Length: 254
Image (tube, rainbow, N blue to C red):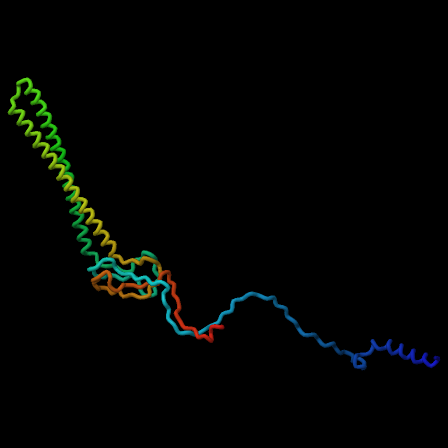
């Protein structure tokens, strides 16, 4: 038992000096630095849109195509106000047709309208006159009948007054018919004017909706032979254009 005392003392000394020595058992050199750790950057996850480019072959087609043409025929195209690629608004004038002939017809109609109004005024005056004559004839026949009862007037006078009443009544009826005919003529002139003004308005070729002009087949000087012929303009409604293309199946997964 006495031999274990020196061994225990040596073991305690070794455990005491161990923390003071470097890991390899050698003393640290003066001025040496400890190795640096790796740099770490922390990023927060974000939602982003990723885009890719794919080369395909196809056609650009309007989602809805509007064909614009004149609503009247037989007139010459005198002005073009829109070209391919122009953005147009609803009701905008794209082209104009000649209105010279329509202006002449409108002037003639104006003159006819004035004549019709004058004819109505004349027939009304004539009717008033015949009504007055009829009233006078009725008064005369009533007076003659009273006188006939007293013997002052003869039967011949009474018969004459009654014939005058019949003539005046017939004249009133004729005047009424003439007034109705004059008013009918005036109504016809007014209807003709409405039709002329409508044709005049339609000399302006307007687009029924907003969009982009895709094609123009209008040519200045051309005569519009039929309103149903090839349209003067083709328009993509609201400018909506779709791509009609074939995409390779291998690219669909992208």
